[in-house]
Structure formats: structure tokens, C-alpha cells
Length: 280
Image 1 (tube, one colour):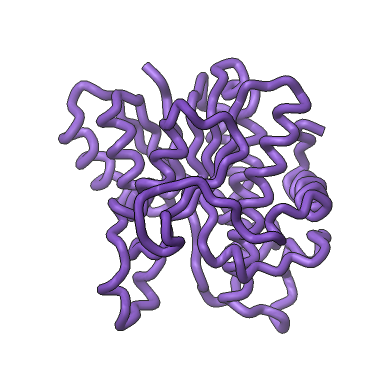
Image 2 (cartoon, helix red, strand yellow):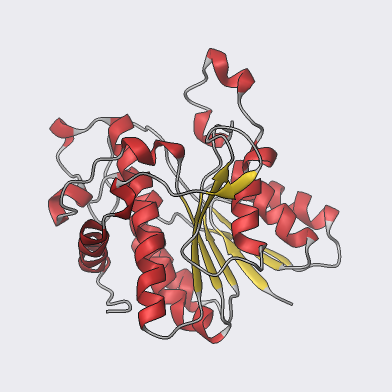
């Protein structure tokens, strides 16, 4: 039985992905920060899939020590879905002094992927990283330590920072694909985005036009395809046909997202912020 690890699995895209993977026969480990919501979500997946093993683990991916402890508990993994995210919160630093959106959306997932890499590699596994249509507004200039850490509250723009983190997720997916190939690994790195979908991320920012958005179940189709489509070979970016809506298709993403110099610089910065050397 294949084993999938899904972050941010207690609601929205992560929950819909965990449910779909369980229906396909995957053993699923569901990770999320809020215990009560996570337990209820895991119980719903179990009820729908009584013959599949479902495990729930409380984990805040922005807490790097917690990520390290969790990674030690995993014996094998075939699919890692880096789904957890924050969108537009008030300024806050993680325990390690990294702005919370970047710590959650990218840095914690970088560390989790690095620590599970040998297990993914031995399984010829797949890593799915969640970007967003707003990666097009991302503007990571140098990917320096200071820029990625984002510890200066005076320069904090919550929406620009969110866009930057989603550009970082796409950079990570693409750089991981390049480095895995150079290392001779058969692990596939694929990026996805849901388009315009109402998920738990919007709960603090309801909008009049949300009624025109896709449901979380519909939005999750892109990352589920990225996780399960056997025709994908690594390096792809899957999202809605018409960017905000539509059936999943392969996308190119923004011109900026294909900047190999910045993606390599982001990788080095991520190594320094997490203290891991990964496919160096």
C-alpha cells in the first residue's frame, strides 16, 4: 500500500486531497496545526474508507523542531503533498524568527522534504508543492537570507508576502526537479495550484465574489492530478485551464518563476535557514 503524507489536511484542499488519496487506496498521514479540527477530518476520511489506514498527527510546519521530530517517525513515504499554507495574516515571526507565511508555505516544507528525501528516493516517490495563481505577483529579488526571513515588520505587506511565498513554492518545485535529475534520483517534483477556490485560507477574508469561486473539492483536482497522474515525469506545473477555473492542465507559470538563478539562490538560503544540506 502506498503511503501519502499531506500537510494542512484538516480542511480545504488538503482535506479533499487526503480523502481522494484514501479512496485510491493510499495509506494517508494527515498533518495539521489544530488538533480538534484534524481529528474530526481524519474521522470523516476513515468513515468513507474503512479499509484504509488513516493517521493524524498534529504538526505546525512553521516550527522546524516539530518538523524534525515528525520526520523521524516516518518509516516510508511514496507521496509528499506540501499543501499547508497561511494567507495574509498579521505580521508574526516563527520560533526561528522567520515571517510566518514564508515559514509555513515554503521553509517548513523545504525542511520536511529534505528530511524525508531518502525515504522518497527509495520509493521512487513524488513531491507535490502547492503554488497559487498569485505567484505571478511574486517579486523575490535576490532570495537573500534577509529577504526570505522577512523579519522587518516595517516592510511587511501581507499580500505581497503571500505572493512571494507562492512564487517560492514554485521555485522550490522546479529546483527540486532539476537537482533530483542531476543526482540520478527518480523522485518526481511537480507543482500545482487550485485556481480560485474557497478554502480555509479565506475564512478571515470573506469576499462578495467568493460565490463565483470553485469549491475546495474542485480546486483540489489540480494537486490530485499532480499526485497521481502516471503520465507526469517531473517538472510540470498543473493548474486550471483558464487560470482561475477549469479542468486541470499543464501550465508554464510566469516568466519570473523560470529564473534558474533565483531558484538556485532560494535553495541555498533555504538550506541556511533550516540547517540542512539537501541535494547539494
